[in-house]
Picture 1 (tube, rainbow over the protein chains, first blue to last red):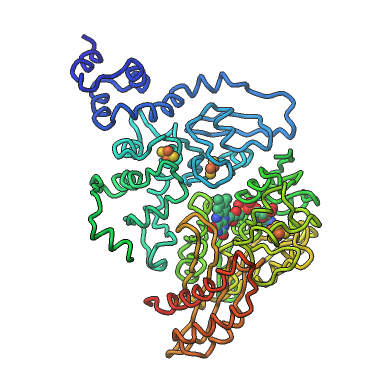
Picture 2: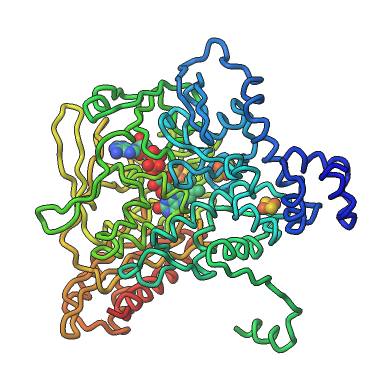
Length: 266
Length: 328
Ligand SMILES: Cc1cc2nc3c(=O)[nH]c(=O)nc-3n(C[C@H](O)[C@H](O)[C@H](O)COP(=O)(O)OP(=O)(O)OC[C@H]3O[C@@H](n4cnc5c(N)ncnc54)[C@H](O)[C@@H]3O)c2cc1C
Ligand code: SF4
Ligand code: FES
Ligand code: FES
């Protein structure tokens, strides 16, 4: 029996549909890594992760499929876009945003267009180690820069710990803001390591590197990524797990009458 | 967005030479690209100045710091020297926008960001600032977010920058390069202008002038500082009203005050009356209240923004109190 089939028999509690199996195959998750993965994830959420993963797997072929050049561009510019450790020379209309170049020319549709005006964070990518908004970045300005999108986070079929934590903690509902949230959260890990301050940091003068961020700090620092589904609590929890190893699952209960009264009179 | 020619400048001479009357310099693009998408700004050339070598923070001969115009807002706000000596500036800059936008936004671009008046952004609406002579939509329209000081019938918009409010309180100087190769210094409070009958002109810069640096005086408010920003949600929003407060207190007496307000005028609004009142007085809540009342009595709100008067008064008192009571 093939390792794969054996596994399917073993975990019949996770009755996978054909589609789901195809997704897992495409992700290259077999045997024990598939088992580990499934333990972390409810299969219902597989599609969300897979959509971006697929793009990554198909990156090379997708890029070939899209037209190299459009004819007679007004104000054409040439730029070598270095995305997820691959370089692609592009000829573009000078008006092209990095977001549109990624999505429309490189087929990297993991990065999302929410507002296209800097107001939501869905288009967040990491440029030279810093989180940026790709919708307000002109592709023309990206020559020589190292761009990382959500498709570039997994390494050797292993999700980035932040991706794993988002899955584990259900840090999403519809998933639209998720690629931006994850890129933003990963960049924030570095900012905390470097001891960067935020508006809610109590003392700007004595701040040291290697910060452990409080919940208030995390919320302030992640405020550039709006989640229309309101998955904020779980996003904070996911971030905490990777950032400080705090993997406590949040619990909730109905407010008591006493607590309700207190809130009303506050 | 309308078509434009993209010119990547490698140094200031290239940038200045490429400049034409219909060009714009491109900093982080967080304001300019947005406004071009809205068809509000219509340059036919963008001169990318991101490779210009104005990315350092150095000591200046006034005993203060000089901030390069092309440094990002986050690099500036988080620079150890800025945080230690000008925490008021760091705090104001960190209150603005989001980590992503602060990473992109340049110091020069921040000073020149345009108003967030909704009529200015919507090309189907009248707006003297966008289209001189078309009228001011906000004057008799939705003006809850608008000015209570220094406006004219042609424009009642406010300046949206948080960084500028702190710079007005601290008292900075802006260095610019002119297209003929010479340079000049502009006292920070002279950079922005009141709308008068030319609201299309936000600043006193001449065409093609390039901001290269911001000079800060020797640090005076590194112990007692606070930037209070009041907004409709607690993060990722522009100020309804904001106050930058810096105090120097010696032997229980205020020896130096820096106070400015955002969200209330076409320019970062320096609170000269309150500053004058407080100098030499004791840092008591009575004095803070009196200073705030003195400043706000000249406010001339509109129907929808009368709230800003009371809010402004309270904000001044609170910012001063927080600044004073901060543990040194
Ligand atoms: C969603 C959103 C929320 C925001 N919230 C806040 C907030 O809460 N508080 C706040 O203060 N700001 C806020 N901002 C505004 C942001 O701070 C500004 O857009 C930013 O500082 C502008 O800098 P930039 O380098 O991107 O400028 P650009 O957009 O590149 O340029 C702005 C203008 O300045 C000119 N220019 C740029 N650099 C120079 C130079 N060196 N010399 C001469 N001219 C120059 C350009 O030609 C252009 O006209 C927000 C922006 C967005 C999109
Ligand atoms: S307030 Fe100024 S910016 Fe707003 S509509 Fe009137 S003229 Fe335009
Ligand atoms: S799409 Fe870029 S911020 Fe919303
Ligand atoms: S998960 Fe739906 S917008 Fe965040």
